[in-house]
Length: 233
Image (cartoon, rainbow, N blue to C red; front, side, top):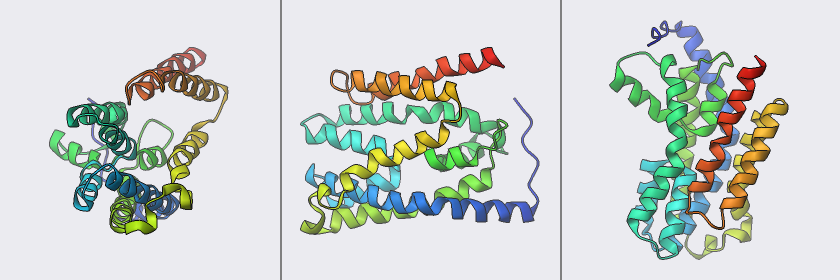
């Protein structure tokens, strides 16, 4: 187990927090609209407004929440919805493993800090050398969490004004958001090949596989990309 990182200088900590907060603003705005569409979809699936808001506060993961709601809306069981949500969130396991050595404290303390891991914050806090800036991570996640809950509340409580997601283009926000994250990670031919292959794998399975499985299958392509990257190192 690598030694825990040295405590940062208070000035560096404040600088990281400010940078993380500023970097999170565009994602917070998009997250607000995305979670608003979730609130709408959840109400249409039979959730109460309180249930939709509580789900956003506890789960705080768009892909898992949309997958669970879509299963329930199509007549699936709560167990199937939970299983699909767990599959969708399985990506956080390797993300947490990568982050772990950059977090100080014992297992419980590091697990608590790991709750701040979301896709955008995790990617932006990566220093590029295998380590992560945890204060940047915390500061960039905090505003996104608040706007995620606020957006869900607006969508769930908005009444008939927001009942049609396509009316304001809310149905296009979710795929656009993750496409922007993907584009930012494409830096060379290897990452481009991995992204394209993973996308094709997901598309080929989305009509025939249970929710969540296409994403898991596509994520396995990243192992191929890692092998190629090590082979050329």
